[in-house]
Length: 255
Image 1: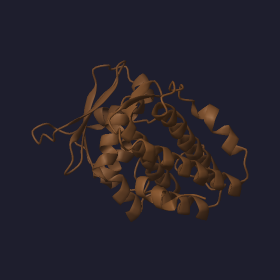
Image 2 (image 1 turned 90 degrees about the vertical axis):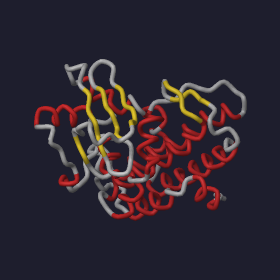
Image 3 (image 1 turned 180 degrees about the horizontal axis):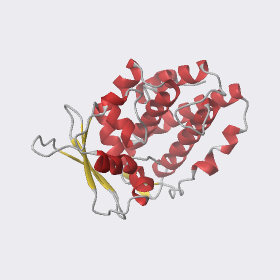
């Protein structure tokens, strides 16, 4: 039996994602062009299982296993029927919540994850961010998604806990290794991006004296960082010119 109260406490966005995934056609398309709803559910189940597997090893004092790739962890869930896949995701989220609870007393401890490190506290944040982002993939722009995406911690987590991997694919296509860009959203720090052979992403205090290549609302900026575009392009404002803006958008290609 799942511990719904614990899931709600530690992964509060779970219900919004689950309800939307359950209500949609499993074969329905999503904003991830190659994925249907059933593929997104399999991806989320793989995320929850892997986050719990790696973090539980750390918390138990065992050697932390190498993080498995999407190709390794998702196939068992893709092979299930649609109802069984959703049930498996719910069990995986419940298991993850219990592991997250066990790590509440060491939030700032570093743990290896996908070739980098994440703090224990970021494991829960990462699953929450996946629930928010992939809910948007299923629903598109709506008031709930805009509110969730626009939370300051979503930008901070994207930059601090994920960072350079978000730019790796886009940077590989940029010949200009010196390219830098600035994304601005009201009420939040600026996001600074570097392309080329050593891509980087950092937060900086908003500097009205420094021109921003692209200005947008906080929710749309998070979507951009993850290689997505809001349904209403007028939310993106730029005076950088087509060449520079084109390079910036190329850098923001996502995984």
